[in-house]
Image (spheres, rainbow, N blue to C red):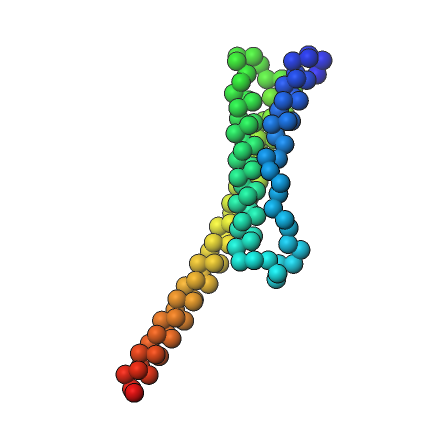
Length: 125
């Protein structure tokens, strides 16, 4: 990258890709993590990756008719990596949602049994 414009564009791209905020604190033990903590972490990561995808897409869209150079190739590789991470994290979130919904259904069924028992006890008295 001998062209000074390339260096300037690469520096601008790297600055734009810096994290937009401090990451949430990590909980070392999943047993002590608050309810929904994993979903919160994953959602935060997806939001940050989507911000990066927007930055990378903008950088690639600013070519103004010139051919792809080293900066564009780096941006394209990062874009693909970020999209892969978003896909993977979304699949994990879908799995979490499925297990949480199954747990909620079991709780509702148990509550229905409790209500039926309470109604029977009330009608027997």
